[in-house]
Amino acid sequence: CQLVDGLLRLMHEVDCRDRFERYGQLWLQLCASESVRAHLSLLHQPVPTPTAAPGNLVVSQLVHLYLGNYSPFSVIQAGRAMATAVPLSSLKPEPDRQCGMSIIAAVEKLMEVPGCEPAPELRCSHLWWLLGSRTPRTLCNSSALRQWLAAGPEETTKRCRGEAAVSIVRELNPSSVETDHWDICGALRWILGGFDEEDVPNAAALCLSKAQQCQRDARETMRLPVTNYASSWATSGSYQNGARRNPEAVQLIRFLEVISQLGTTFPAWKAAITEYSPEWQAIVQWLEDCTQSRTGGWTTPGVGAAEGRELRQTLRSMLGMADSQIDDEERPNLVLVEMEAG
Image (cartoon, rainbow, N blue to C red; front, top):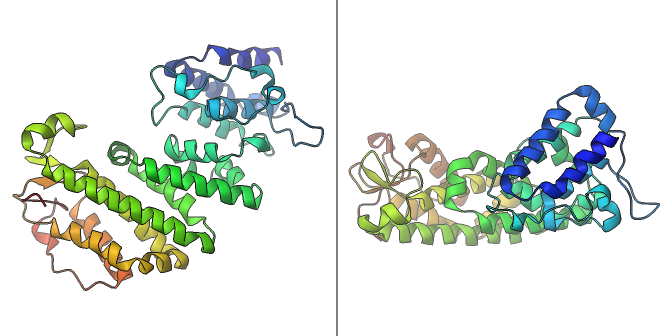
C-alpha cells in the first residue's frame, strides 16, 4: 500500500506530455503482472457519501488523471491525488490526439480483473469524448472499458453518447482521419450506432452538416495554386505519383464510409439518411464529378479505386441513385482527380 500511495502521489510531477506518457508506461508495466493486478484490484476508491459505489482506487485515479481538468472527482474522491491531476490544457507541449494512450492501456489491463472498475462518477461525457478523439482504439473493440461506459444508467449513457458524438464529429480534421482513420471511424460507428431510434434523425443531420463542411473544405483545397499548396496543406509530402494531395477529400471519403456502414447496418440510420437524400446525393455526385483522368492534378492518397468503387455503389444503392457510368478499371490507383478547380 505504501508503494501504491507513493506512485499515486507522483501524479503532481506530471507536468508535461512526456511525463504524462511515462507515468502511464510505469503503471502499464506494473499491471503486466497478474499478481500485482490481483493486489491492486482490492484497493477501493474513497467515496463522497456512504451509499456511493467506491470503484477501484488505482483505476479511478488513473482515469482521474486522464481526464485532467475535466474530472468530476471531488476533493474527497481525489484522495491521494488531490489537486495533483494536472489540467491537460496546461501540459507543455499541448496534448495531441494520442496523449494518454499508456494511461488508458494500464486502465484496460487492470479492468481485466472482474469487478475492477472506475468510480461511477467518472462515467461522464468528457471521458466518452476524450476516448473517442484521443484514444479511439479503446472504443473499436469490446474492451472492458467500453463495456463499462455503455453499462451506466440509461439516461446518463444517452446524454454522454450524444454530447460525445457532437464533439467528435465537429472536431474531425484531415490529419487525424488520414493517419488513424480505422480507429476514428470505428469509434464513431460505435458511438453513433448506439443512438436510440428517436435520436438518430438529429445525429444524421449533424453528420450531413459535417459532410457538407468537408466538401466545402475539399473544394477550397482544389482551388489552391501549386505555389501555395506545399506550405499550406502538405502533411507527409506534397505529391504522390506526380499529383498534389487533397487531405480534405480523404476526410470526406472516410466520413462517408462511416455513414454508409451505419446506413447498411441500422434501419433507423438508413431512414434518416434517405430523408435527406438530395443533399447526400449531391455530395456523392460531386465526388464522382471530380473523377477525371489519371493525368489530372488532385488526388487522394490512401484511397484506392476498389475501395472508392465499393463505397460509391453502397451509397448509390442506399440513396436510390442511378448506376454510375464511371469506369474505374481505367484508373486503378486513383479515386479523386480534379483537372480544373470547381
